Length: 385
Image 1: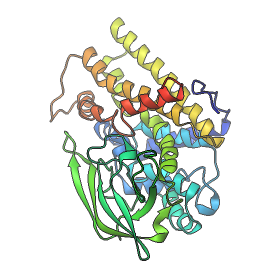
Image 2 (image 1 turned 30 degrees about the vertical axis):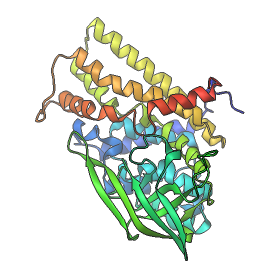
Image 3 (image 1 turned 180 degrees about the vertical axis):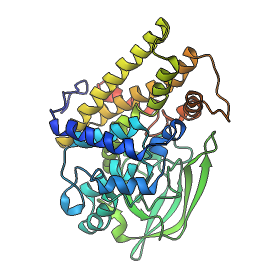
Image 4 (image 1 turned 45 degrees about the vertical axis):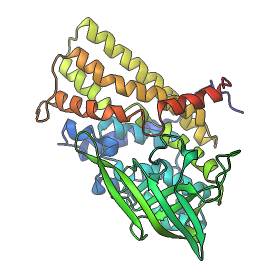
């Protein structure tokens, strides 16, 4: 059993550093002329053409077997691509979820037909996934899922609602977590299953937009009304949903996106402060740098663990909790150091990026699991509850 307190050093990877230079050169060309406000979108920025170019470079599905369109490279090489994309503000939403977790889940528990049909499309940057986990009135308590799949001739009828479903309005597929068995008070995790849902072809699905404070449309409510899923839509084993979904969350919670969401604001803050910042500003920037370095070290450690086939769920929860706390602090630190408030129509880069960070930061500690849920997981991992 892994020590919940240990973040072992990631293995050395000279190939990853060679790759870093290639990615930076690619991004310098592809993001030329893209303004800082647009870059602030990054992992919620959707650009079909960009994702196809990334796929053509072999930077999606990097660790997967070549027979499924992958490239059999290391988890640390994949990490380099992720952090360079996020630090540069690349629009990765089209392929992000599919590459990070959905494709990995299919590779791990999917049928051979599912792998051959879908994984090459993901690796080519031509397939967008969304995640059907959260529900109304449930918060991060996935075990309380009420979306129900009922067995019928040749498949299942699904009824229920999923909430905060990013990119559902443009997604090709959803991995749906729902109940297929009776609720067991003694074991709330039993009787759940994951399904692979074709969002374009399945009847009985209604996607309703949820607009952010900024007016942006990333989130959705997805309503299933007698939506028929064939038997071969089951992903993994019937009744194995809880074990599968908790393993999947380790991929969702541990990456650099959990501490780089407002990195663009730090870049613009440094530019706005100029080459000779005040002592107060220098101290604040030094503190932020120390946090980034620590979180990066922890996150890369998890990549090393995943490369070894481990499932570091508690480690990932720590990175996610610490990382989103930092992300939410950054807009407030920026406001403290520069006494100027953004307006909706500002043309100044720093203020435009600050406005984006202020509007979106409250969601950082919600997506991927609330702070309370994560800290409960960490406490259990440490044997404190």
